[in-house]
Amino acid sequence: MMSFVRKFLIYTVLIFWTVVCIFPIYWTVTTSFKAAKDVYQREIIPWLQFQPIWKGWQSIGLSPSTIGEPSSTRDQFFKYASNTVSISFSAALLAAVIGSLAAYGLSRFNYRLGPWRNKDISFWFLSQLILPPVAIALPLLVLYRELDLLDTRVGLILVYTIMNLPIVIWIMRDQFSSIPVELEHAALVDGADIWQAFLRIVVPIAAPGFIAAFILSLVFSWNEYFFAVVLSGANSPTLPLLLASQTGSQGTQWWSIAALATAAITPLIIIGLILEKYIVKGLTAGAVK
Image (tube, rainbow, N blue to C red):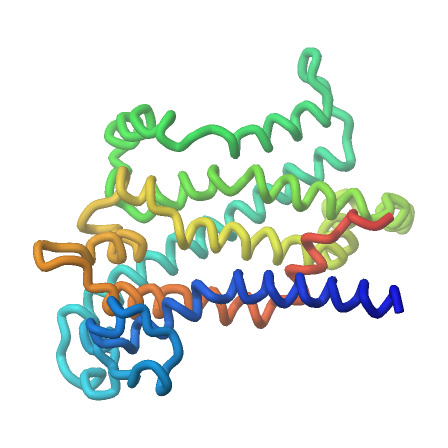
């Protein structure tokens, strides 16, 4: 009886937390199909409380009735989306590769930098997540102006790569630490060099962690707003800037924002569903030994 009660309570809590996590996405998607009166009346259930229409999607040129017609709003959306995809994927890949190399060194070799050891260096990387972006905004703005990187995709890729390195290093360090070093020693005995052992033995085993680090970096880069505002302009705007620009003198068009948000997060949801098992394996690496 106690076992049944325990399972019932656990599943009740899990179901409740699932609803809490998914409800904002549900609210966003349904809002994109609402009329203005339904938005302000806080209607939730389609077909029961309100009749879905394509108002939000029409406003951005992505409804069935407007998809084949010329639309400046749709062209603008695709421009922002193109920048977001290229910047986010490039930054995530760079962060995953560079962070993995740093994490491998911290997990396999002993470093000494004054009083600092490997654990201190690892904690220093993690502490960079605490640093508020506004603290480096002005120096970064001046540096980018001197290097002619303002309003460029390369400039955002570089800052997003640096921004994501701490989380990648921590994920991959635990991933590499869970792999027995004896496997690499065996490869070295068989004639492989250190790079061959790393690429042929360690990398395939650590692939789930690499994918998890890549996905997290992709999500953080995709949703980043502050540096996009400070460092981008007419040539390299991203989707968060487009979403923030949907307020005007006529008020906030929630249906348009909801449609844009739904279109913006759909690729991430699809990628997350496809790579779910790798994300779970990567994030739980080293948790059980």
